[in-house]
Image 1 (cartoon, rainbow, N blue to C red):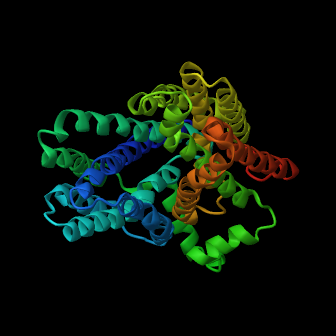
Image 2 (cartoon, rainbow, N blue to C red):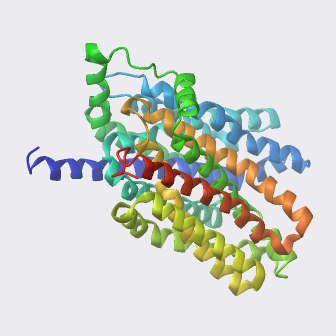
Length: 426
């Protein structure tokens, strides 16, 4: 490999990271605004909070079912544009149009139909854009790329809040059009600038397809990929998915239950309690990229373990101090620990993939674990709250996260037993 190749490869990786971050930013802008402003539309037709919650949760159900399947589908796609871009070129504009029409629904059946159709289409390409990252970026540099994408995703919370603050009351229909326009613009830029047929991963897969000696390689059907993960005597990949589920549950619980914790335990108003997580969000944004660089220097598993330990210790301390200031500090430190885990979890899973031909499927498996944790975690912590009371909510979330530490440490033990297995990328 010539010295010219390395700088060119790094530039290509940086360019791909920017475009993936742009796509994720556009997608998450619609999702965050959807979560914030669709419930009020449902309230115009429904008084049943349970039914509203059920309808709002359908997108997560679609994600668990659709995303692994579509990720696997893209792994098996071969076109002159590559295996990911065709899905984005179709899916993103369709989703954008559907999203823009949601506030135009004049009846409950029309609103629900638009909601569910948008959720189905948007879930069908959500893992595709993220899979472009490991397609273009080398394993040893994926943490910093993942950090950039996580930062872009986090910024959409600010965008959604600004649109809600300045436009929703006076221009409710127009407010939905802005995230839609961002998605259309992102789709146009991706189709214009990105051809994943030029990615190292796609070229490797095409070469593998053409190699007569490797045509007998295991099929990339979804059930085969999952079976390979489950049956593998080295449980590293299964443990990564378990750690993602456990920490995803702890993270979701600490975020979704903080408002009632603040009102019940700290004596805050609902608005003040709901703002407790804002400084933590800023801490996440400021530390994500430095933590990515640290991960590539000292090891991803080590930083993941340390991050979850920081999360557990911070929330445990906050559970016993029980003042608004102590809670904010605990959540800030916990967010930094979460960043250390989140920017590396998907990267470790990608880097453990046996071949570039299953990267999309692995992205889908990551989503299933994360979404399952987001669904089960708040319920599990809620059950503990029923036993211990709201004053120990942070401790209950920390206990769930502590199980994720055990899973990550076990992965590290397995890696040390087999140092040749991706030691440079874990």
